[in-house]
Image (cartoon, rainbow, N blue to C red; front, side, top):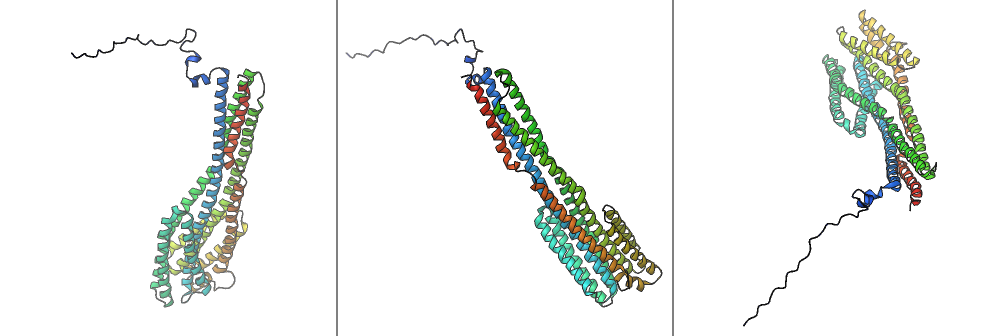
Length: 439
């Protein structure tokens, strides 16, 4: 008979009971809360909270100070670069209208133009082409417009050569080629140049406006950090009955010194930039605009004579350009330049007077420099040379002053974070001394 193995008897265990907190530790007591919550309990816990807040604000201040100095330094650097680009674009503009003035005035001579005038025309176009390539490298945002400008110069140069070839042979069609070349310059080339000038002026203005904003980072973050330090020191004095915590006070002094030194340095840099903006920079713009308008007036003087009695439009254009020269020179304390321009304008009036009386040959002789004594060539050359020298001085002054402003900034751009960390460590040191008393 087979015996079956009996199963082991079932065991019984009482149901699990939830462990209730001891009667002396209610659910809301510190012992019943988590370790993080208990870490902030009582006076030691509040000390730790103040420690974290003050240390965090110290680091934030260091980052803000670094950002403020980097912003001002970057704005100064970009302002200098954009101002240099603006000077290049205006130099392109000047060279173009200078070449056109040479071409139109030489056309009046007939046959082969004076070698010096021809060479000046060639040099002006070559310089414009060189500056276009340099400007395209310096500012990638201008490359498309500069490329289109370069194409218009090729067309312009080709039309001028056609005008010269026909003029040497005494063919009247040469004057039409010259007018077509002038139209290309006025309608295709110069609008591109003016758009480039406007874009770069806006860039320069934006950077000048941004130089002073770096100070806001330092001052606002510094004041907030000092408020936290003062509250921390005041709370510690009340709780510990000790009026001064030296390490935390030292951290506050470090922040305060950084704010004072940094604020003064940034304000000084912003002040120098503003002085440059309202001084050398504005003078550079006025001189460039005056020279551009002067060359345009010179071209229109020649075109009026080339038109032989039908040049009213060119005469009106001369008057508009001459008015612009006077307006721009009025912004400068340059009595010599104004006097030189007045001398040229008086000669121009004599040219127009001779032409109006029917003495076209006499007007041309005065315009191309064949007349004795004062003539258009000698008087305009005097103004051109003086204004060119003055423009070089003012444009160089812009670069020098902005560089000096940037070099005058203390190295808080890369010292800002270490300063913030140092202040945070001083807070930790000072607070740890008080925490030790509770162990």
